[in-house]
Image (cartoon, rainbow over all chains, first blue to last red):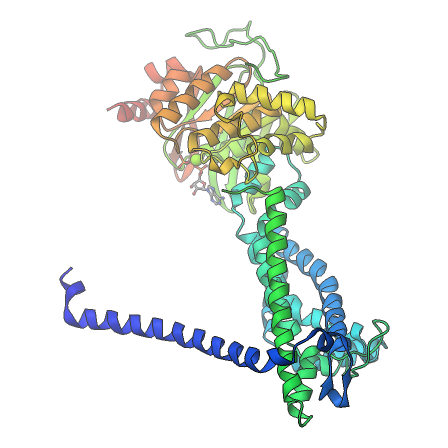
Length: 287
Length: 279
Ligand SMILES: Nc1ncnc2c1ncn2[C@@H]1O[C@H](COP(=O)(O)OP(=O)(O)OP(=O)(O)O)[C@@H](O)[C@H]1O
Ligand SMILES: [Mg+2]
């Protein structure tokens, strides 16, 4: 008690407070400044025409219609593939593999390593495997599949955490009522694991939608409107990269495209959260 | 007041103060030389006992002597614990519990369990009851509604919750949650009800309600209850079994009618434990 009120102790408390608040303020300020800058420069160019027309003169003029379509298709392929595999693997790891088994440890370790691999490595892998070995060429399909590989480790690990966070007594009380493992999984564990899944999904989508390196080598950067999943298509992030690095006079459209990317990201996150919330309330009723 | 399709067996099996006589129906649970290990560590060893139908049997003993482990062996919840090994023989009705080919789903419908901490699912009150029923093949909404009402009345919860069956079960008080859990188990009309310290997480009032409820179940279900509350065991039990830790493993020391075990224990350990708790 005497210690707590001593001058040095108080000074330390102060210092700690200042550091914590300062860091928080710094992070928030940086984010606001970034966002403000993008909105400030991008908003004036944003219009319905911009969203729906094709780019002209390498993107200096015109819009981002085909690019938006390609981006959404790539993301669609990525999620269609990664969600079922991700949830399946997470269930296998969390519910059917003991913590100490060799298989469990090896898989977890590999996933953690994979989650930290730079995206360019995934790009080269995707190029070698999907484009060349499987003969899919530079295509939206190749790009989506490559992104799926990149997103899977995060998705699996956080969904697995979601399952592990479900209290053990749900499993016991369900078993004691003679409910089968599958029933317990589908009706009790899965809904309870949704928050974890959601975190993984949001992190994954965030990583996927902002990806350039992995997509340059796999989905290419043709800016025409794609006609099938086997067509090459330019993703929004590549478009932004191209406009700001390779095209002089492309800054205005680069800003507008960035704004679209940010809005897209926020919209997807919002929808995911809303869907999960609704799904949860339909089946699961918590306090 | 009675749950829908409960077994109506002739019961009081233990004549008030004597050991069961020859006229009494054969015991429903037969445990022979049962041992349970977590990995290499034994939780209890060589337990042999028989429990007859209809009455309330109390398991008492100090912490860590394997009472919970014993209960979970009876409905094979031990299957869920990695590294847990059960040897010996358990027969419940005609079921060879430990045989690998035994249908555990059927076993667990026959043997319900109530845990120390109330553990309703994070569903509505109604769904806590109808979800297990549906999973066991009862689809008819009228019948589900009927069973819901009967079991909730059976545990004295109907009047408290009948207007809010769709609100979350987790919003109920601890005592109400525990009674809901009992109702949930009763809805499946088991023959045996295992209760692991069902009152110990509750306040005295709720605890009293649950105790009265257990007394009400006498004769219709066979109740095996673990309790640290010896006074409670004396009040409600027909038969009792005393476990103790010897050489790092749980042992069954003495069984008998509740009155005999609490008033004239044959074993010195039992006597010491009971008088220790009394004083
Ligand atoms: N899941 C488990 N894994 C490993 N050891 C366990 C496990 N559960 C119980 N044990 C051990 O087995 C022994 C018996 O435990 P058990 O829970 O059956 O005792 P209990 O009589 O119910 O005690 P209490 O009165 O405190 O509830 C204890 O030594 C305990 O540490
Ligand atoms: Mg216990």
